[in-house]
Length: 368
Image (cartoon, rainbow, N blue to C red):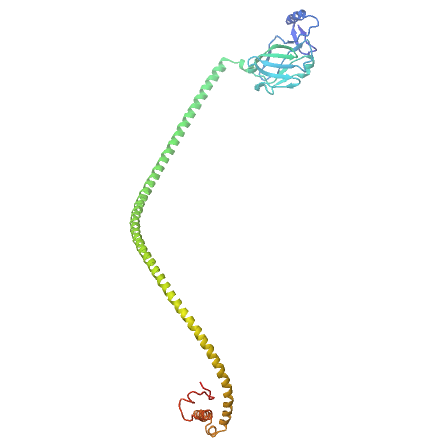
């Protein structure tokens, strides 16, 4: 026989004999007392793996639990399976995240039911439902047992068969593994042998190349030694030439000093000559000015004699000599006759004297 317990709880039923402790507790309470209590079923809650389960408990006396602090705690780990406070779900264990739900439809009636989905064997154990409301605190324990039906149905022949099959499969797997390992080792060994042969050939080629390079290096060393000897010879030659250049430089400096002294003396001598030439030039300038004045006087005399010569030319053209000696038929005699005519006309006092007249008289009887 079952009895309906709680504040209008639709599914909270207990056997009749479990009501005696609660009736005694209610009888001991004084009327009007407000002591907070949590009531949970004493029977273990059972479920199979993968099912959803509801852990039930409720407040006594019945009251609204919306503003209460409700905690479902797993005894084995002492961790929060679900934590509710003032209408909000707070922290909980990692393995229960997304799997728990506090049924809030019954909070107004004081029901603190918790649903756990997809239970597993690790969820088995005791759970504590703790409530704190103001200064009051109360808790109750609910036991959960999760069983796996497939693990319970085991037959001896099935176990033996499973062991034999496991041994056979293990032996086959080990044999295949060993065979493949041996084949892989053989293939790897062949690859290593081929690699060693290839490396030997490569080493032989490298040895020949090293011998060739050694011979080349020896040739280079000989060339370097020869060039070093040549460089030493050139260095000695350069030192000798440097000494010669230093001697030449000293000689050039000495010659430059001598040339500078000689040049300075020559310049002084030429400056003296230039001073003398300048004084001579001044004197010659004065003489030229004097000659220019004399020339001006001669020009005035020339103009006077030009008129006389003009008249003589007219007389000569009419003279018998001009008629006898034409400039075209006999130019030399014509010129000689003309000259003698001018001399007789200009210098009648010296008709036959040489050095006066013809030698010092121009074409028109002008002194040269």
